[in-house]
Image (cartoon, rainbow, N blue to C red; front, top):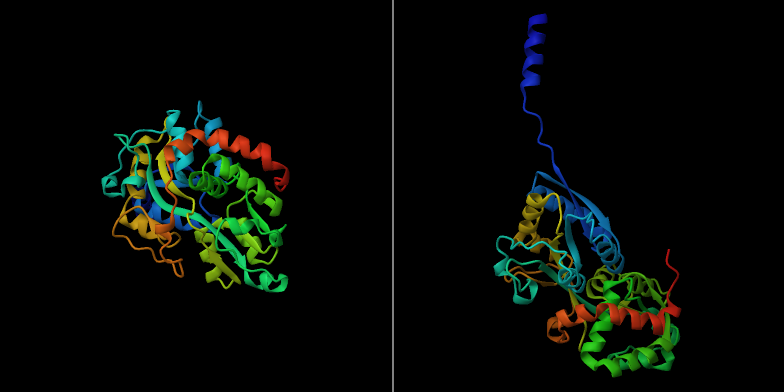
Amino acid sequence: MRRALLIAAACLFALPAAAEKTKLTVYTALENEQLPVFKKAAEAAIPDIEISWVRDSTGVVTARLLAEKENPRADVIWGLSVYSLLQMDNQGMLDGYTPVGAEKLKPNFRSPKSPMTWTGMDIFAAAICFNTVVAKEKGLTAPTTWQDLLNPAYKNMIVMPNPNSSGTGFLIVAGWLAAMGQQQAWDYMGKLNDNMATYLHSGSAPCSNAAKGEYAMGLSFDMRSVTLKNQGAPIDIIVPTPVGYDLEGTAIVKGTKNLDAAKKFADFAVTPAAYEMYGKYYALLGLPGVKASVDNYPADFEKNLVQADFSKIAADRDAILKEWASKFDAKSAPKK
């Protein structure tokens, strides 16, 4: 008996130890409900990594990455505004690596550099969530254009994201600047401010609050609008033309101590399987041939996107945010 136990123990100690996984610190502005889905998919595709999320709104994540420039703590960025990625790229903060298969992406979904410094995942665009129940109670008609939001009947009935905190807020402002030009856009925002109840620190919160009936309408982004409508919220999704938009992207942070694992991750992020996953939440994807599976997405949305120069807007980002804050920050909600 003792001999059998000794043999069993010897066999047990002879078994190879389980390979230690590489922990990747991934900075993101993805929605909270997406995190477990994305983590599970990535770890299944790359069994020797483990994702540790650092998640916040776009403005907060971007500020943190910039503050950590000299001592980076992130390995990978997955799901952050291309405006933020370009700003970091201009400061030499992104590692050059062309993921396997990245050449198949749509041209505007990949870095023009060789090797690439970022790849695009999906597009998210501005949308108005209009609460039909509140509108009926208040006798409000639905807006169809951006100019309609200046109607005095909407005073204190509108909320939108603060662009210093939220990537959605920034893409809305950037869309107005691209569509209207500098002077007209700032004049427009000044008039819109008269009707604005408050500026929130989240891209999804304005639509969520409007869906709950706290406001008549919230300026938000397309997929939050579609998700809430699919859940039964009494909202109409209004997409004025032209509409501002942004790309979410993936990048390797220069200085990562886990470069090999980060490259494997970047390879996964541009696979068809990854885009099929993105397509559960976003309708406009970067890989041709992959169809989104989102229900009730507004028709012809892609045709209404504003013509925007991402590189110029990224270069002007700090100045735009500073001017916006000086004019309108007094109406921002307190930060929690």
